[in-house]
Length: 157
Image 1 (cartoon, rainbow, N blue to C red):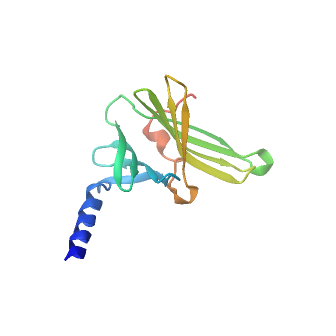
Image 2: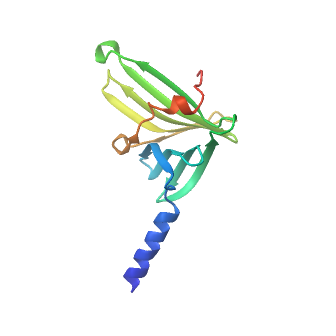
Image 3: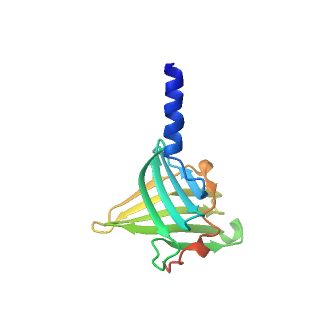
């Protein structure tokens, strides 16, 4: 009986904190500190959603209603083709601000080093203090390099 109750609790708990069925994952990864960072789009409400969660519980969420003219997120990218010989480089970032903080979800690839990075960079605008939550590249689902420029404005940074 305990097993059935435990399983039922987990099942209900899991559905409560999971994405809605109208949401599609655009980009997500697991951070080395146990958090999950996810960017998704709700196709019914036409909203872009950032979530930071730990063990299935949403700790922080930011939503951008794509139906109105006010944008919460901005997007930046840089692409230099040419492989190792030309120091090929890919830099992609989705950024937003909340209170005193600037948040930047990023993906980077260096052909020269043949290495990838992903993570969440947080800057305290008052103090200039910066922290970086490093992501596990092997846990990446989706792509930060495609489709975002069609959803949010491109930043000049």
